[in-house]
Amino acid sequence: MTRTMDAAPTHTATGTVGLWQGSALYIASVLGTGILVLPALAASVAGPASIIAITAVLVLSIPLAGTFAALAARYPDAGGVATFVRRALGNTAARAAGYWFFFGVGVGMPVVAVLGAAYIVGVVGGPRWAVVLVAVVLLVPPFLSNLFGVRVSGRVQLVLSGLLVVIVVGVILVTVPAADADNFQPFLPHGWAGVGAAINLFVWATAGWEAVTHIAGEFRNPRRTIPFATAIAILAVGAAYLGLQVVTIAVMGVDASKSDVPLLDLVATTAPGIGPIFVAFIAGVVAVGVLNLYVGAFAKLGASLGRDGDLPRWMAAGAETGGVPRRALLVVAGVGVVYMVALVMADLNLTSFILIHTSCMVAIYGVGMAAAVRLLDRYSVGWWLAVISCVLVLGLLALAGFNLVWPVGLATAAVIVTVVKRRSRALTPPDIAAG
Image (cartoon, rainbow, N blue to C red; front, side, top):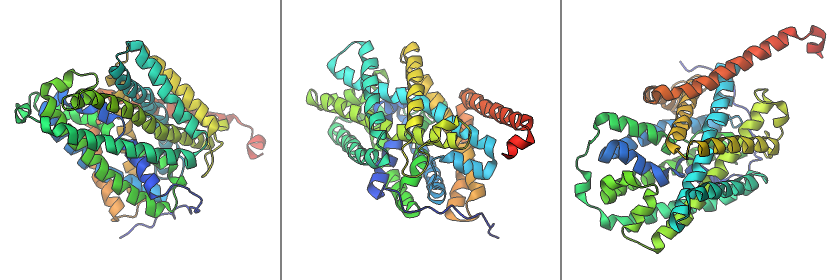
């Protein structure tokens, strides 16, 4: 028997993001800078069997993407997953989900910038400190773009995502002639444990389906546009990552794990000279594109958390559809500076930061899917996707292991905020509370 749910909120047709801009936003959020480093990182821990890992994660991403699309289409709000969780699981769980994205996933901001900067500096042969300088430069355009809202940043994203797809297709076509079947042996050099480690890394590659939920209210006709945009992105991202992983193994073999800029070295095998320069340029564009989307999502979420009392209320301006969350954008910039300093102090060791990012993403997936099971109509397509996703996310949580200490810490902060707010209300005189 189908459970009767509360009606989805009415969404007025004030959004400006259409199908192609929406598809570009999804592609940027999921494909992004993972193409610059993850094929090599996965090869280092799993060898040729990393192809199995990326295939598994791509299959996993289908029900996850479908569920988030169903939720975003039904409940378009700047709070994204936090909004879904608030409706289904309550304020404390929603606060935790918001903190996981804003403070946990936010760790990825300097990582994205450094990845793009490493490629640019790798071509010109500059010193290591130049990577930090270029990374800071790459962070500036996304903040400037988002000062003008999604109407401007969405158009910018369409161009940037188009360039991203072109570079991926170009790299695959250019490097295929250098493939060597011997590079696929031994296929499981690190056993199935290596495949598990590669899957954990590839969560970074397919994380991002939830990011666009924070700007779902900016879509025109979200119930129609969001599912179609999601489907286009699934096909594009799946083909790109699988193709890149295969050619990385086929062309570079064990050498893939030894490179700081594997995509450059991959192209250099068949197109020395102009090829690496072109890839480095596009890498910078790709980094800016990913940051353009995520900065906007972080700002919208920050404004919604301010609106809902989970962060200072002065951040709330701009949470509404069409609003520009400039105050929250300022806070996002401050958080980005803190994380960039931390990354520099860690000698630009990206792996630990990526794992913090992915562990928070998996935690968000967990509460997001639990919320979906409660919110979506029982036995509908979206509901079944959510049920399947719940089972799959349990596997990701197991793989995350010790790295879950980060989302646990942020969840503890959310609980503390709940306790403080309740005590504050209890101590407030009734006449003041009534006023």
